[in-house]
Length: 246
Image 1: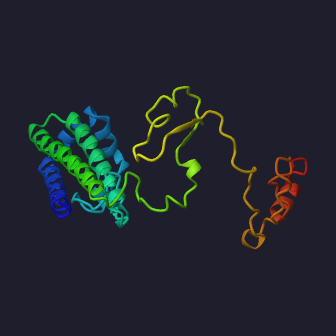
Image 2: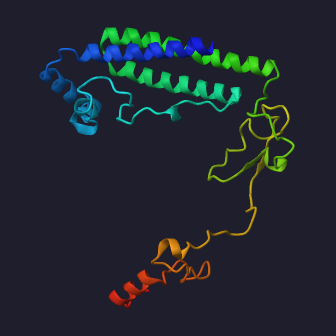
Image 3: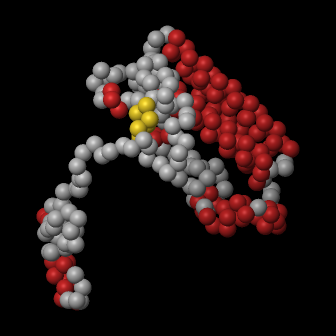
């Protein structure tokens, strides 16, 4: 299944690249201008938002996104945990289908629409494939609902089921996530209406003056007017230029 989907997705890239090349083939500048005037998105791109394709690759396809950001290995999700990775694949298929649907609504070209209708269907099936694979993982006992199903005896269990009310709304305790058994079948959601800080007020340590040179690390006491003021070389220069300001 992994190799089947991966090979097909490479084919989708070829389909889209071919579609773009065919749409641009022999297109006169007058038609391009007309299209730009009729669509602000097209006008923004053609107006200079991303000149990389014209300047760097001469109009050839580039291994980059629509903003010219080059592809890199960070796009590959491989955590070593199948459940986490399969959930990521469901998300990727869902995001791809959203973008395909938006493209379908932006074009009136029958050929483009026909190809996008095919891609919509494949994204639908691929999402179902990943979700089915997740169910099989759970049935085989390889993983639980939470990924990874490790260190449950080490985590702070008192924080594993509590919703902290940190919003202005009044309905966050109405959902399935509180006052009911959670999807892992172990925890029951609890609503904490007035959460309190778990520790004292903290602040970062002062910077090392050897690294910053113009700053001696004198922060003053927290929550006082002197907190965070400079007393090193930069502070002395400021005092010399404008002694009235502290």
